[in-house]
Image 1 (cartoon, rainbow, N blue to C red):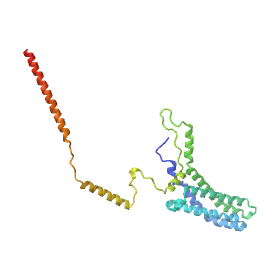
Image 2 (cartoon, rainbow, N blue to C red; image 1 turned 45 degrees about the horizontal axis):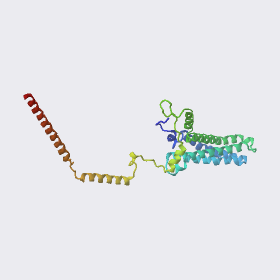
Image 3 (spheres, rainbow, N blue to C red; image 1 turned 45 degrees about the vertical axis):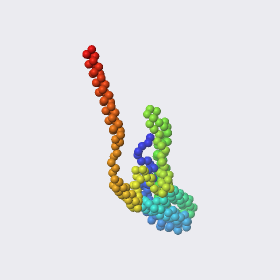
Amino acid sequence: MSSDAPSEADSTIHQTPASHRTLRLVAIASFLPAFPLCLSHGILSHHPVPAVGLVPLAFSASGSVFLLRRRDHDDGPARRISHPALAFVFDVILAAAFMAVLIFTWISDERLASLSMLAAYATIPLLVNFFIHLLMALQSFYTGLAIRSIVQWLAWRVLPPDCPHCDHRLRPDFPQLPWLKSLRQRRHGDHAALFVDDEHRYHDDENEEILYRAESAAEEAETSQPVQPEVVDGRACITLEFLIKEWYGVFVSSLHRIIVLEDDFVAV
């Protein structure tokens, strides 16, 4: 069942959920307390795993800053690099990296009882970043592949394609996937198609000058061309007038003969 409302692909192709900005700000802010905690935990425990957690934390903070700046300036090379699908891959990789660091931290046999509190505080930023990137990856996957529209499309498959009474189309078309649509637009250079009525809507100053000169030349040609009087074919008018006169003469002569014959008949 087609409708004129914008599809999920149109509404989310260059948009991210509103919560992503808040989550990325939290990811940036969490790097500040995580740096001294993870570093001190690694030094005191003589184990490199807690300090290694600073690597995904640094990537998370720098990537979040880059993506937030891209949203404010959504053009140029930054727009190509920050494709929604690439942002999804970025979040998935970071979530997996945080989980790996957390697992190796928890299973370490060299944990000291005196460092348990420090280890707990040091893993909190890692856990926060893990859930942040996992949530953003799930949201990006849900919107980028139009999961809701696909579920609705599958639900409509239980109905016949057309109404048996009015032949109205019941099943909707397969939804457009925002990620694929965005890839097609970027592949074609982000140029919007011009329709027939919009032929001269977008042009630069040089094209404007050329169009203005062409219009001026056309107007001058129309004004300079002498007006030719409309030629009326007089032969057709003369022929029609001649036929009318002939028919009128024949009618009058026939009527005169009838009157004469009638007078003769009365006289007899």
